[in-house]
Image (cartoon, rainbow, N blue to C red; front, side, top):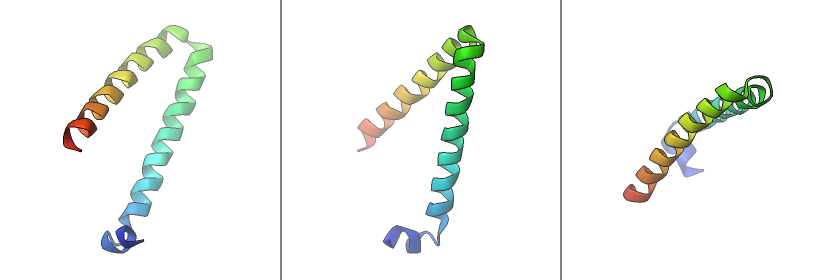
Length: 62
């Protein structure tokens, strides 16, 4: 609750925005999985690189 007041409500907007992007990406990947498997594999590799980079940042900072 304190975060919502501290950020003047931007945390709720940012969270909704992140969730919307995540859902859009998941839907796009699901469509590629069935329609264009080779493109899906390329996108999955890119996504795994982004995820590993983010995980490394989180582990080093916290």
